[in-house]
Length: 276
Image 1 (cartoon, one colour):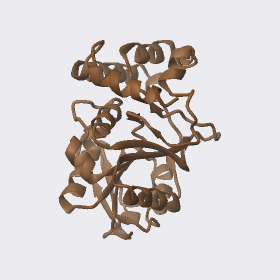
Image 2 (image 1 turned 90 degrees about the vertical axis):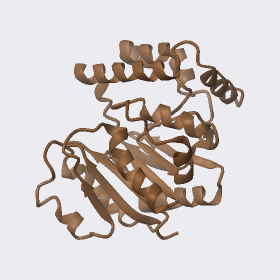
Image 3 (image 1 turned 90 degrees about the horizontal axis):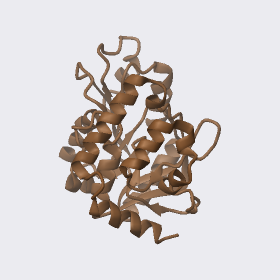
């Protein structure tokens, strides 16, 4: 299993108390080849925070582009390295994740054993242990308008429950066309075939866009045998600026794939709902 997996984490003014414990855990992953820390912050890490990186020069690479590239574009820097070096798997993940090295090794082993899986996401819970419904249908404009405009009321609606697949048994794997970008374990061959994150999306719909492209040729699996904890800040629900970023990038997404006419969305969603 050694050397099968690269991992990338995107930072933006991220406190060391968040990313350092995570990196220490990732260094215990048996399948690990390299960790890429891509820092979108205006200023690079200070010397004291670079110590952990200096202690593991062959396992950690720190990249500071000098500007905020956006989530997908920053991950793409590392994914291109994974493709170039022909490392079989790449994990793009958030810094606000709590996960064990054993869980990552187990998930990598599942991917290694089944070549049909192009993308895998484990069971995700919040800091209170509540399940986060992060495998979903491909969204329609109304799905996103309801969630963004109506907040908690929109998220509690029956339509949103259908969008989040709450009617399905989340104790079993689900082959969903939309998996959250908080933890995307990808087969390098699959992401190379489908294309990397679309860098036109600064933040938010890049995970929808990439999952559906991989879903064309591979299984994109919610896999609940392993569990991770995700803080899930949902900045767009608390900041007008981030709400604007969310809304404008979703407009770009629908401009790309279709607002009300999207045959692939209809086909993927219908196929999944028939599994009920």
